[in-house]
Length: 113
Image 1 (cartoon, helix red, strand yellow):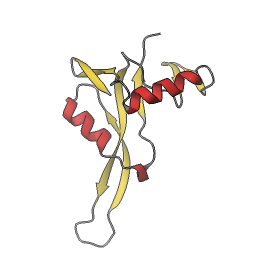
Image 2 (tube, rainbow, N blue to C red):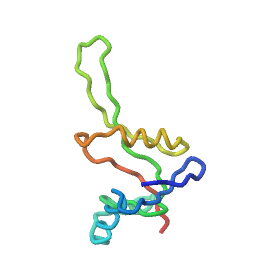
Image 3 (cartoon, rainbow, N blue to C red):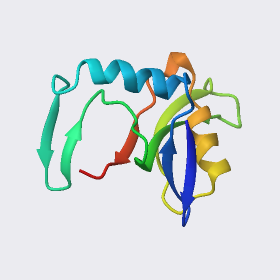
């Protein structure tokens, strides 16, 4: 996924045959069948794909908590990263901080209807 910058808010452009592009094409096969619900913020779609023009608002990120005295083993903590008004490097760093073992990365996107 590539993005275009709008005042440090990032809009998606899908790289042909990239992960996001392939996921979006698969998702179109199931269009209308994904679980969703209405909220005061609009429609929330679970398991939806990224579309061209989506605005990235937030993502999950993983931090490692280390006990400086060595009494506890380091542990991985999944956090919420607000991507608005952040640099591209900060936002991509948050997305890259996750490993497959951490589970899926969640993106919060705004989409024009």
